Length: 161
Image 1 (cartoon, helix red, strand yellow):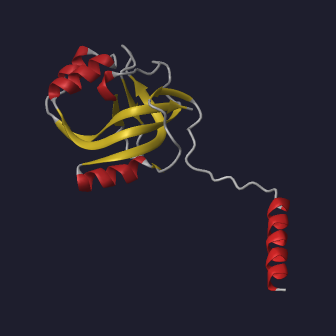
Image 2 (cartoon, rainbow, N blue to C red):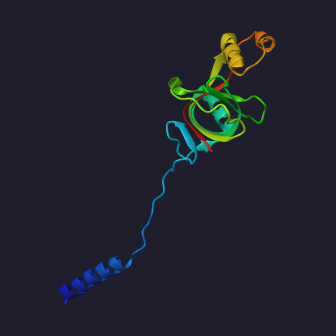
């Protein structure tokens, strides 16, 4: 009797398992849709520029993903961009190992960046170089006379949406 009960239970269990045809899909991070430059970027843990800045100010540097609007792009090669900030101090973004560039005509578009945010001292020479790349006049370039301590970002991947 015990054996019949055990066999019946096993048979019912097997039948019920076979009748469940629903598939359970586990969703993990997905690739951000858009045109990718550099490494692929996934849609998990994307933060605001302000949140990343607060973390970097406490720790000096942090791995981060940021979504925002492009304010400006290097007009010589597309070798850097600036991300708009709510406080008017745009985030300067360079690309890891100078390994990729972005199109020069993407100002105003939304991007997701994946890389490292850090508090950095930007020398007068570097600021003047960026001003020259941006097409600033010599008069504007000459007005740059002091280094700045500010948040910078080195992206290993950029997705233009």
